[in-house]
Image (tube, rainbow, N blue to C red; front, side, top):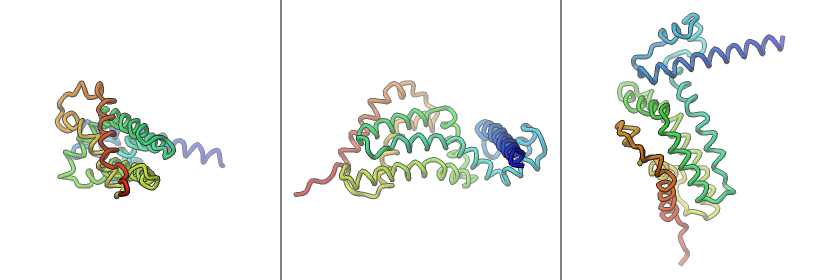
Length: 211
């Protein structure tokens, strides 16, 4: 009985993964409005009811797609944010990995999708924000709170501080990510640019000296 249940579980997961694979292609290539559950069901094969049993709405399916694209992204960053490591080294490693990741084609595509569709479909912007930036800000905020408690940086609102650092990092990639302007030099100058941002951030948030 246990073996049968295990087989059913694997089949369920395989089917779910196949649906997400096709749904990712549809959303990124056609956009949210032009993607239909019927088209995805036809591409994957099987009945429409099977698709709906996995995902009860297009919104739920889109949320699963975004979560799939960002899940490993967050796990890697949490592992990098080691409170025992030197803060300057940690933030440099974090920043370099972040910038390399957000300019990858699939990440750029889902970001453009969220920005372009969120005015007609507010749920698209909400799903993207809650699955991506919001989690990144929260996780980095926890790390920075630890740094504040150790006196490595001055006390402030940890999540606002995290947001400031992340927006500073992402600013350089805005032309390519939002306006489709080629930036071939972006990755070439990555280490130097991130190092400068980290240096400025640590100066701005340096612990206040007692008078």
